Image (cartoon, rainbow, N blue to C red; front, side, top):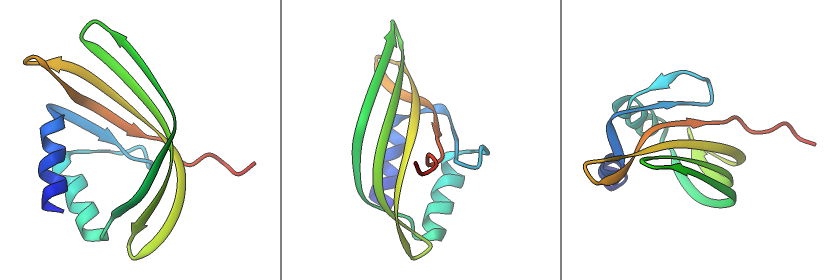
Length: 107
C-alpha cells in the first residue's frame, strides 16, 4: 500500500479533492486511511468507455469501468463512472479533482 500511496501523490495537485460515492469530500490522508483500514484492494479494472475533453490547460476525463475490488474482506464486482479534472501545473498534468459515481441500477 505504501507504493500505491506514494505513486498516487505524484499525480495529484496540492489542492486535490475527491468526492466519494456517498457525495462527501475527502482528502488524500483520509482516503488513504480509509482504504488501509478497510483493506481495500483493486483486483481488476476494465475501462468500458473513456471520454476526454481538453481546452488549453484544463482537461476532463470521464471513465466508465467494471472492476473487481476487495473491501472489508468482501470481494465485489462493480460498475461505475469516474470523472477527473486535470490541469497543467508547473509544466505537467496533475489531477485537481475527482468524483466517483455510484453503480448504475440493474436493467
